[in-house]
Image 1 (cartoon, rainbow, N blue to C red):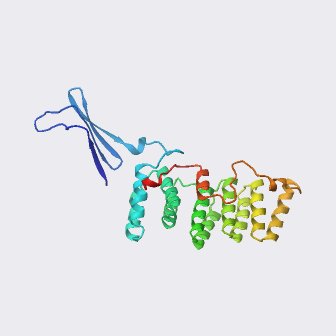
Image 2 (image 1 turned 180 degrees about the vertical axis):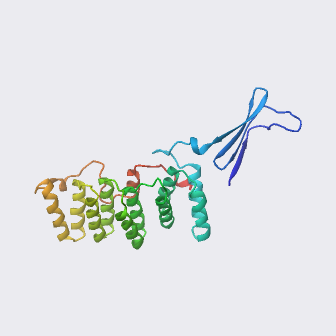
Image 3 (image 1 turned 90 degrees about the horizontal axis):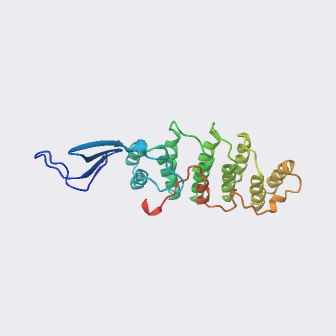
Length: 273
């Protein structure tokens, strides 16, 4: 258990009963003890910081606890015993928002193995709700590091999620990422998965698939997807030629773009971790 003390002046001297005006603070774990002068007496107050901390919001930096956990995980990543200990203590004690922030920071820093382990632990939490964009970020970083076996395992986990909410933007991101790595089989599996989860393909979905499959030389698949699009939008499919400015994920979108779309966005600073 970590502890630290901050003292701005001499504290109350119990032996001779003499004290000066002071404000000292001692923190142990998530509890802060504060010694303050109240009238002619010295009072000690206690505050549980974990109950008062506001959730991380978009645009805010990582909390101290999250930063320390990222640093600890990176220090012991090559020592399985120590790594399991950090996950079982520091990581497991984090608040929900800090856990998500740590996972996203590990992804951002290209720490693939640590990110996978963090994701597995988060999935065990009672509050866990699957997010397609979080899967997209994991798939992107794994593909970028040519960890294609792990990428497929993560995608199969996405397939097996039973409480996925329809998320067209998220599925479009996964489709585009898979196509960028030339993983055609999983791309089509993702398209079918998207529809099976009640998520209707939109113009961006069909544009990503039709143009992406054509660019990979998958003409027959592209034609099949085009025919499906024509049933919904007519034979012209003018949107294939449009350069849209909406929120859809574009071809060649970066991992950072995907993460910026995530609903629980957290601003991070590379120098702190």
